[in-house]
Length: 376
Image (cartoon, rainbow, N blue to C red):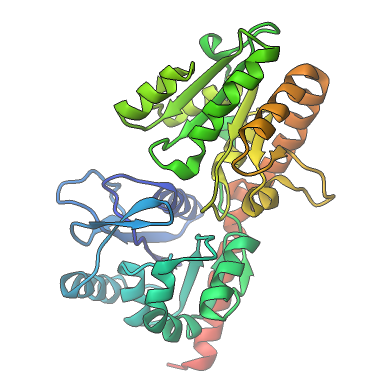
């Protein structure tokens, strides 16, 4: 198939959706398809050959983060040219609830069109504002994907139309499964290591809750080491250091996997705005014992088909509950090992080789439906 993928967010600072789209494009090409991606981005930004840049984005505060989006007549013209020249068998839009390139492509559709919703936010102001522009085109899509039940609920709440498919984000789990622990991040019985990784400048990632757990854990494990890795400002790094954490800083994908494979307990104390939880899948795939906040999206990811949890969940926003879960796992090495094994088994169900065929079948469904509705 010739597949066009529309990314609403800029490639200047790739986040979860952009990385998902690149992974999807690459697995589809590996499986024999031709793929082209269009996305916002500054002139000269480094992107793979299959990515076309539609122009510089503008920052918009959204869902506890900053979304860099592109809209307007110039963007519309570039999207239309890309659609026309691509002559795609199917076009896959991502986050058409955000006023950016995906909305333009939804309006300008020339053939079979699929959309994926990643957002889980019961009070999305942007989606409420954009509803009059989105809903007519959304209802005409050939297939609608939500990445989780919570993302599906968000779509129904705001647009009144359910997704036709629930297909999770794919994760390249192999790199995490084979990741080798690194000595400087590996703990001991007396000095266990607890880790967190992410964009800690965003309050919803739960750094404050994580730092708040430190004194409670150290009452029982005085030499416990709390590691903070990821992309964040000097101010955030200083705040973490003042609280007694060790600042690791930004890591590439390979080192990220090794970090997760090294720590005794990996924490995901996010406070909201999560529709899936890729970080949970990555940490579980690396064999980490994971403690995560009890967000519905995280519960969906952690729960297997038998109802067993592959992560220990704690009350959202509660540092004391987080600390209690951490100390319980440190007190019980065998239980921690069993939790990590369940988590890894669950994570493998999200591997791209499991997910990609489901997306391909959705594309084929969309092509068949479009041919029935609009015979050419």
